[in-house]
Image 1 (tube, rainbow, N blue to C red):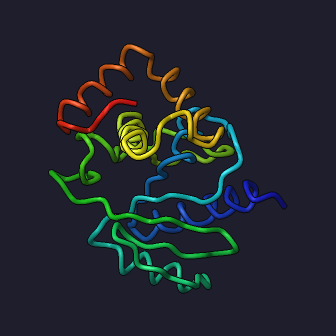
Image 2: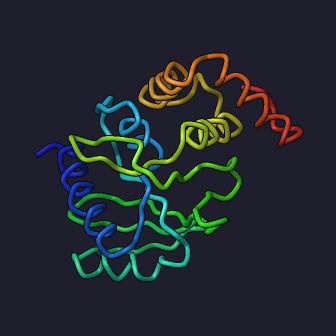
Length: 183
């Protein structure tokens, strides 16, 4: 079984079970891109998830019940392995009856499923939140130095939202962060 197949199988098992327990989860990063596009576009190294901050302990208990191991606290959340798959989890914050990611424009965590992974409708972060993550990445590493998979995903996102929209969001990002630099 390929790494992507293991990750898809885990997404299919974990997200519906968490949902049944009242724990909404959102795919982030690469899997959010693929969910929004409705197709797997590349090999993935991990599954990034946004988890409601107030339910983080419940989610960790669910993961432990399934045999998760190697919990590692990070400055933004935690990493854990389940069924050989690395889960990279960060909290989303309750705001006005919904959830948002810190440092990202409103609407980052839509409550309705807006993506599909191998036939399963899933929640995933918004296009704008996905691009914001790339904009932060651009601050740290010049685009030309990104791994090919990241450059291709970034281009796929820009194509999906439209170049004009992506450029406007990037300008908004830069305006909100004076001195952020250029890509």
